[in-house]
View 1: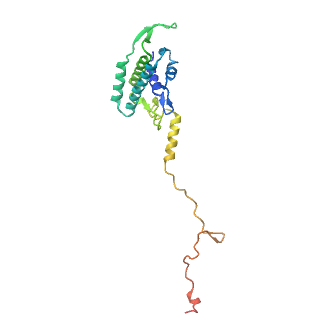
View 2: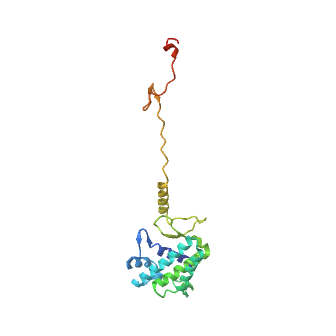
View 3: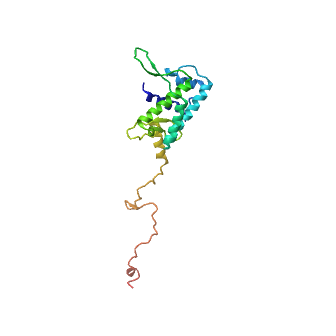
Length: 213
């Protein structure tokens, strides 16, 4: 069983709320969130919806603390979740597989979700580092992700947000003054527009003009 894979549950839950709207605005949204997860089967009610919203806030706070460089704060929040929602492993055998460790599927859906999400994050952080937790830097986005780049350089949740951010940055840069070619003063024997005919000219031969005096 790959416990680290459960970290995806944390990311998926946090990302139900972004600038596009709230995926947990009603029970239908919660049902859709857990529908494709066999280990989270069962009916959900309004109390479950409220609990899941609270869990989402707790998980987002972990990512926010990690992004702000507060590693101790992030770990403290995560450890608190692990205490509140401990996993319950058990040996299981099914689908012609031998005995293997499996997580108990008893309890409410929010409790099972929280236990798996918290444990997944803990294992992921222990293996790869807490600085892998990221929050999209595009204005107004707020989606979170787990940075898998070799140099820990990821800053955006998607290529779309990255492109949008670069576009905004380009638009915000001051425009350079437009350089135009200077007007030619004389072209084909004609003076260019704006030429001052009254401009100072070299003095002529006054001697010839005044009778040689």
